[in-house]
Amino acid sequence: MRSQHIVSEENSRNNSLLIGPYTYSEFFEAARNFHGSPAPGLILGGFMVSEAIKYLPEGTIFDAISETSWCLPDAVQMLSLCSTGNGWLKVFNLGIYAVTLYDKYSGSGIRVSIDPTALEDWPEIKSWFFKLKPKKEQNTERLHHEIKMAGASICKVEPRQVKPDLLKRREKGSIAICPICGEAYPTDFGAVCRSCQGEGPYTEIESSANSSEFLRPDLKIIPVEQIEGKSALHDMTRIAPGVHKAAEFVKGQNFKIGDICRLQQMGKNRIYVEQGESPGENWVHENDAALKFAELMCGEGLTFSDNVCEGKVNLVADRDGLFVADVDRLIRFNLVDDVMVSSRRNGCLVKKGVKVAGTRAIPLYLSKKLFDRATAVLGNTPLYSIKPLLKKKVGLLITGTEIFTGLIEDKFDPVIRGKIKKFGSEVIKTIFAPDDRDSISSAINELKNAGSELIITTAGLSVDPDDVTRQGLQDSGVTDMEYGAPILPGAMTLLAHTGEVKILGVPACALYFRTTSLDLLLPRVLAGIETSRLDLARMADGGFCMECKVCTYPKCPFGK
Image 1 (cartoon, rainbow, N blue to C red):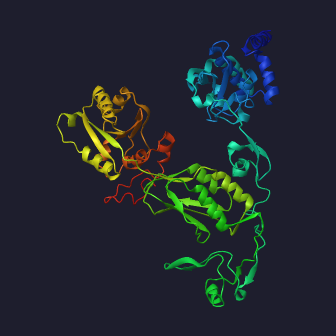
Image 2 (image 1 turned 180 degrees about the vertical axis):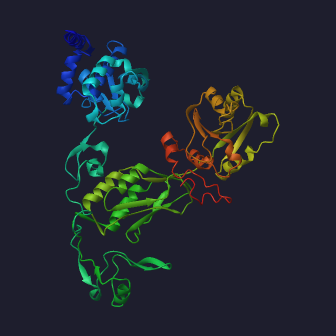
Image 3 (image 1 turned 135 degrees about the horizontal axis):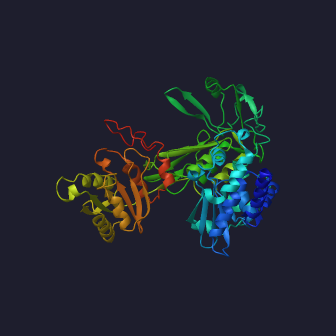
């Protein structure tokens, strides 16, 4: 009788517990039909979405964000009008079990997530959530029972404001036919579709790199003894180890009888020669490919020569400045078969006339399909540019009560002035301030009103209670503050804005070390390059100074 009573109570709870418009039992079966199974994550997601809806003002037209691609998006689609198809559900696979419902016009919303600290009373949920035991060892019946009993009580509910760019209505734009695969696609994706740019999920049916016999055009090959009167199809390089490496014969050069011996010494017993006609429209000669790549890669402050050498074109700095590379697109280009580009490191300083990058096709003839794919990745935006370092009026704020009161002599002013002068800028005003928030805030505004285009602060960025530079900057109303960088020396660097004026906070380590994060960041600031948290994170690769007894920077690995 007791067993029947327990079952009766369980059924009663199943029918009284609501998940959106469903009873628990109805949602359980609906999840099975929609998802393929009543997965624990989907059932829990149902409680989370229902909880978020409760906190939204009645009548709110909302969109949704799921921070995981597992199960939770299906709960959103089951309980709302939001779906991935209509674009009202956006999935950011951050690996976090959280969902946000937000007003699609204002971006104000509610985020519901699993609270790990609330799982201690629910051992089966905790074991499932943290993957503490294999799925086959989980007690599925017990797990579902705990989810039903816990509901949204194991969740955190927090207000959230969604970024403005997520409130924009998505549009496909114009549609075109991809010249490579013939599929229709949005032209905003580039000159060819993203699949043909190498982002597709499928393996190539035919690939020259994987086939047993490499694909190549039908070219004329003759024994070296028969070259007289023929023309070279490509540049041929002679190498003398440690002495010489250059094109001994260039494309289009007519061979003479005396060239036979030189070619044999170069290891050439058979060669390609021009036969008066191209191998067909499906192939692009290495020289033509390299010139086109260079044309598309070359941005402001760069130049290149039409004189292709050994199938390669170099990009050369046409002015002094900061070398800037679109690293993500650089990687995408090099993922295309049979093409390459190599360059100096993004963010390094270069002088006019210095070679900064080189590109070429790997084979003598590049397939038109790969050529089109490579040029589509490059698109119409240059891959590289040289940004000039602007001559700025710099305001210098030196903090420290010990300096302000004259207890010790300031050593920072000459250090900063020297680095500023090296790049053609000048310090127009220096202010000394004690370790006091109000004084620092006032000094920032004074430097700004004095016409400073860049403000550099020194010290006061550490963890001591007297270090209040950061707080004083906040009081002055700075924005976009980034504090801390994965660079040694200089981890406590600070970047911020006050209106149009950039602020660069220099930690005290710059008094001791000749080269710090300041030397890596100052050129970027003078070049007008905004540095995001992701940019700083990328600087960790190469951001460790070896602290050599004799500093040779920039002729060393630091920042490279």
